[in-house]
Length: 359
Image (cartoon, rainbow, N blue to C red; front, side):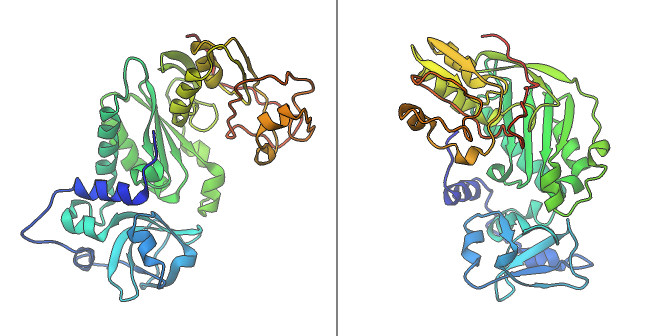
């Protein structure tokens, strides 16, 4: 799906909100009604417009000071305000992360419809239902595709939350402290979706460390009872997705790219590097490729692996970047490569736990 500019996303969101012409409620008024009050994160001069335009993550370098006694703790709701202490929005605070606040709602949205103002439970349900309706409008799920991304973090204005759906299983990938805090509310909301029967919670341990969380027993806290493997279809191709695979088990966000490969592979020789579940290779075959090779090995230092087609054409053989290709044909026509599949050791192979299946 093509990405939209932040300002366009924001304008589309605001235009879909109901307009209350009689009276409006400001975030400051909602906050004033709270018995304990709500802390304010004051932005530096010159940093405000960035967040008004829709950037959801307030980094610590943009913060001038924090007003509140006692000071807010990780996971607390805070107001985000300009130098005059006028709120521009509200979000969830983190005392450790480089992202001091993850913005959840802007002031003008709260003024138009205050039902979600400073209320995470209502906002979570609203955003997930909006995300679901958007996917339905795109024809997801369908008989041709039962694997798709339901919630795409910042793209659906729930920064730090990914939800991929595989048949009747929802895999929730958590990479923010607030997601862990609101786990019961998130699971309850996802369970209310008719098509979902199982939830698999996948905490992103390294990212949660950076969020200041104690991850020593995190995986034990998120035991699940869903099947270990499920058969899904994407673009008419079947896969057996493992709940123990990389990321959420399947790279659902690459659906359009995999489909594109099928449109340029007719009669071509295709090398699918770091192929994992073989999505590019299988789509190339569906597109009429003359020959397809898929390698499940991963490449160390992917960032140095630039324009492999140029390297092949010049017959350069870099043992550092191309160590797994001791000998190769210089006439590959299409070389899809996923940088998400990486390892720490050159000698180590990664064998995918998501199975190739059939066309």
